[in-house]
Length: 241
Image (cartoon, rainbow, N blue to C red; front, top):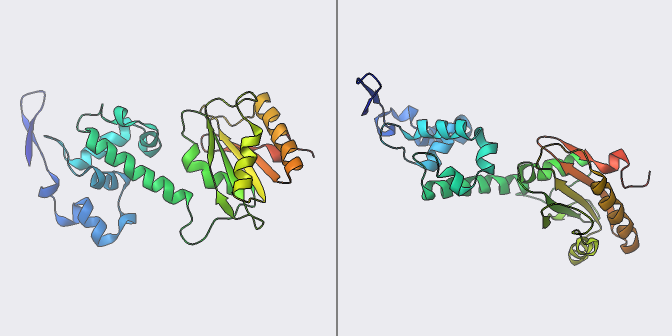
């Protein structure tokens, strides 16, 4: 245990992880009971590995989650922002970001077979973990084969989307390169509000018309906000009814 002085000069004792019973230590609990039995703070504590004087690693993990508003906030935070937290240096910040990126890639991939996208909800769930909390607009494509199985989900643009920036030909160059039968356009609104702007509708209209000329079906354009999305196809915006 470590003794810590408090405001009145008295000392309190903070147990270190090594002082805990095996059944209480995060790493041992994971080995014995599986990762799903652990809290988010315990999992994060395993990644961080060590605390600091007067604060064990579990308390540090809990403080980190509170300060950044849990995992979504950690995912948005940069390495520099993480290192502003007492007890988190560049190495620990890099380990946290690496672990979150592995999780993001796992969610975005299908370990056994390529995912299929047949509804706007499918498209949203495929990309939400990567796009919901971006601080800039990202334009992605979901490239599909004739069975609506995902071929790739490339990012084509980062930044404000408008007709002067988005070159429609580049969208279809990616589709043709992958021999895609169809595509879905997706971009995020960093504000969290997925309501389409007039510029979003105008860009969609141009993409749909180009798809008809190039014989690549444009199935939808979805706009991703914080935990919700809008399908322009469902709303008839930029698409012929």
